[in-house]
Structure formats: structure tokens, C-alpha cells
Figure 1 (cartoon, rainbow, N blue to C red):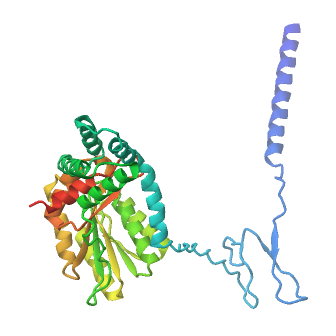
Figure 2 (cartoon, rainbow, N blue to C red):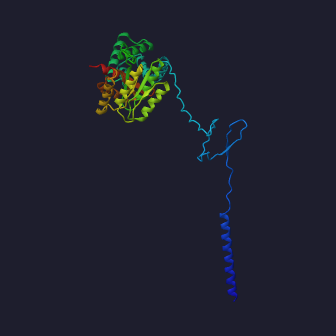
Length: 372
């Protein structure tokens, strides 16, 4: 009997607990959720007019509201206009004279080892065969080339034998005179970039990959703008999107327009359009940047020749500048020979001279171009 009463009590307690739990859960479900007041915004249609309120998250037509100023006399809000894109600042390049002064200062630092080495050898009290061998080795290290180095040494030997070396200043003058004789100072080195016979000067910049062609075009544009010339750029390097953007950035800095085409498009077509735009706009100079191409790739070199032929349907190409990396040494001679066969090189641009390179390849290239 006692066990029966105990079992009834346990069941009753369990039933009460279950009922209490169900009631608590139901109350929680029906408890109202506290709400935060909705922010409002006001519009004024007159100095003393009532201020109508509009919920911040809903407009009059039920659509989502946009924070915008109210236009007097209008029943709706106007969206703020998008901010205009920043206008690039156009730089005023310094004069060519100032750039040359800075360039000479940089070249003086990079060429000091070559000049000082040769002067030290020529200024010795006694110049024997070993000294001449050291002079020739110094010239070879400077990438002057075997034939030019031998020719220069032979001329110096003759002058030293006839005139003698009385001082360091005399040795300096002697060395300078012979180096100038090698590069022929009487040669006309002026760039033909001026407008002539109603047509602009057209400059093609060519070279292998990574020599600095695009940067060279940008710097030429700065120099020409500093001389108050109207310049137009042609981005014919269509295979490298970064080259087109880089060239356009160079042009925007000095206020020069850039003609560009679709990525991977025909570079000859872009060059043609650039020269045509230059003729129509009556600019002074059109600078054409071309894609880097290995001189050993026949197909790419043939394409370069095609670009020049297409350009000349609009205007003659007045300059073809080959950009050489000064650190490549005598390989630049081979590059110059192959490019000259395809597009008739008229000038050399030597880049990266601010390092350990000596730039003597310019002498070798010039002498090679004039060899029969």
C-alpha cells in the first residue's frame, strides 16, 4: 500500500513539472519584441510650414529611401550626383638644357672608373707593351669591342710616340680626341621630329624585350613637350596591356594624347591609326612604341617591317630608334645588325647607364653600321 502511494506522488510531481514547462514556453513565444523608434527626416517647404516626416527606410512610394537633398518646389528627393573623376595634373617638363646637365652629372659618376683607369695608364712615366695591353683590356671591359679597341690603341700609340705625354691634362686631351674621332663628331645626330611638308615627324622605337622602349618614348615626349611641340603617342605594343597603360600614363602627365587599340590587336593597325590621327590633328611629332621582340625570331621581325610599311602609307618614318640595354654588352651589336636589316635603324638609345655598364657598345655599333 505504501509503495502504491509513493508511486502516485512521483507521477503527480512529474505531471506538474511538465505543465509548468509548457506554460513558460508559450509565454516566451508570445512576449512582444521591443522596437526601437524609427528615425525620421524632415523637409521644409516654407519658412513656417509644418515639417512632414518620412521614415528613413521608406520613401513616399514605399521604395527604399536614399539620403539625398530636398529640392525646393519638388515633391520627391533627388539623388546626389556622383563625384567627378579627378582630373590628372599636367606637368610642365623642364627644358632640355636642364635635363642634359643632370644627365651629364649621372654619366660622370658611372663613367669615372673607365676614364680614371685610362688616364692613370697613359700618365705613367714609362708606357711599355704591358701598359698598352692594359689599356686595350680596359677598353674591352667597357664593351668598346675588339676592332674599335685595337684601332684606338694604335692611334694612341702613334700620338704618344710622336708627341709624348707631358702631363695628366695632355693625356686627357689626347684620349678625348681619339675617342671623339672614333664616334665621328661631324655626323649629324639631330632627331628629325619636326613637321615637314604638311606631315608630322614619325618616330618608331624598337628593340628586344625589357630594354626600356616604353619609358624611352615617355621621356622623348617630355623633351619634345618642353620644346613646345605638339606630340601624339601610338601604343603599338598591343600584346602587353601594362605597356599600353604605362604609355598612356606618361602621356597624361604632360598632356599628350595616346592612340591605343584592343588588347592583342594588330599593332600595324594601331600604328596606322596613330599616324593618321597625327596628320589630321596637324601635330609635330608622332611617337610609336612597338612590342619587344627577339632579333632571332624571324616572324616577329617581319611583323616589325610590316608596321613600318603600313605607317608609310600615311607619312614617312623619319626616325627609327633602336633601344639597347647597356648591360647586354656585345650582344647589342648583333641586335643592331638584325634590326637594321629590317627597319633601317637611324639612331641608338642606350638605357641603364646608371649602373656598372660602361656603354662602349655605342662605338662598336656605329663603326659596324658604317663598315662595308
